[in-house]
Amino acid sequence: MTEPEPGTVIYVRRPFVAAIADIFNGKIPEHFPMEYSHYGVYAGNDEVIHFVSGKGIHQVPLETFLENQPKSDCYERHFPQNKTALEIILKNRGLSPSEFARTLNDYHFYSAKETLRRAKSCINSPDWSYGPLSNNCEHFAIWCKTGIKYSSQVEAIFG
Image (cartoon, rainbow, N blue to C red; front, side):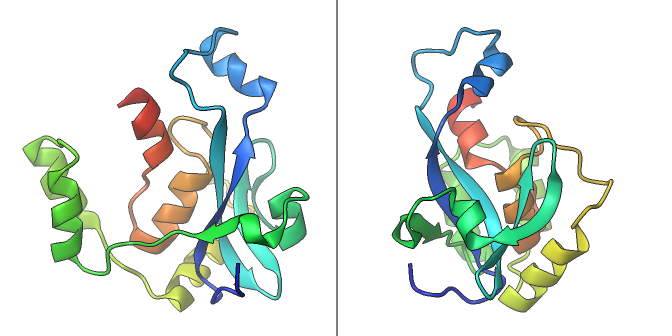
């Protein structure tokens, strides 16, 4: 990974840990992926703002975010830069007309500077309560960039 611009949404692939079994009462479905993407907002100077269960939203060194994985295993998340591009993506997701309209209406492509400002405003905020299926690191990072709390990983698993 080359040095991203501060305010860039980044992610790293990680193996699932046994704790995820708690969500499924110890019985992980066969179709469940064996790894996931952990998301954060790059803050510059090898620092990342991310959301972790039990720790909330906080800023850490990139090395901590990567959990000893090389920088080459860290990727940038790309987003539609306008509503026309988003509309094309949404049409393929099978949303109800009301979900489609709400998502299209709420979507905003924030600049990197504004994305970073939004991420910093959430550090140690009591307004963000972690929930692996409804309010996780991906929900946080995508909200910082677009104003929408969304997780493609949750959607892929639970529809």
